Image (tube, rainbow, N blue to C red; front, side, top):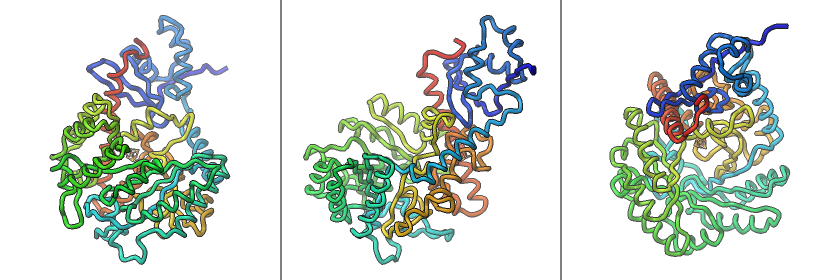
Length: 477
Ligand code: SF4
Ligand code: SF4
């Protein structure tokens, strides 16, 4: 009988924190991060050469069989010749069959209006629609219809709720968004009343709005229907007004704050807001925006960088600012998150050995975003259509748009990502940044993509160091 040997997987990555003298060790495809001491690292490094169990037993004081089994079960230790991607391929095939049988969707969005009263240059609706190097916002596009009609909205809701019922789900998540949905408030209200008549289903509504068009009546309706509000404030006065502008180029800080006050006044205060940072407000944004949130009793801030416009700001400056803000916010009991921590969240939550994930729920095939004209995408910010309400079932088929995007975006699929230290938890990153980057030409495209990747790798390492420091126990201690 052949003697069993083990060796360290080539897909193991170690992040060492000199301050605590501990390390985070994880599998670059399957995650399962472990906090490990020097002794634990020594044990793992012993397997840089293939070792027999007998050799290991001779080296250790106790019996290391269980430890070896534990590390082998998460592919930290493998038998020579073992194909680690085989499991991933099976997982991918399983997930695609779930997409094919229309079981992955759990949420929907309606691009209820493509109009906007603001003119922020960083808005994702300013994405050019082709490789033309021109900037043309969606709401300025010369199309016939900018508001979703009730007929289209009803069809979208009908498709989605039928899918929920088909899969035995009773909780429906409906998001109203795109440019400024309050331009089409009447249709929103009609949808809510229509959904309320479906007594076998429960609905959670959310809306992305800049709030400026919110009247007292609308605010009361938000409260009555318990619509969760996602809104943005890009810093205190100077930082916000550097980039969040009206169409006429005026600052919006005071007008947004008035609406924060209105919501408080009617007893439906916001629990947080989103911040976007571009090269226009990077130097102006500071922790005073976190104080503003804390003083209003808020508990969450979604913070995101416009990675494209920040490409010339050193990565370390961007990451230091993020970590500083995160610590400051967390000390004030404010959850501080964004697309930037998606990789770390994937790494520390779901392993591809036991479940599925992609970069985000949209890339995993869990969301449908319906455009004003009835075309369908995976999220409101992308420009890639995956189907249309008039041919709803097609996108789930093997030749369909949803199937294809989930297949291409499944971790471990993209050749470019092969061997990356966050290949599994990143899975090729945000689809929108990829789309925007893909439109850049030549060397600029490579520079942008390399910068995005470096950003995600470094911010994940920085978060890992914070995580290590918050742990007192480690394997091998
Ligand atoms: S997109 Fe970049 S950072 Fe993400 S897995 Fe691929 S190579 Fe790594
Ligand atoms: S693709 Fe990007 S923008 Fe869209 S949901 Fe995912 S992370 Fe967000």
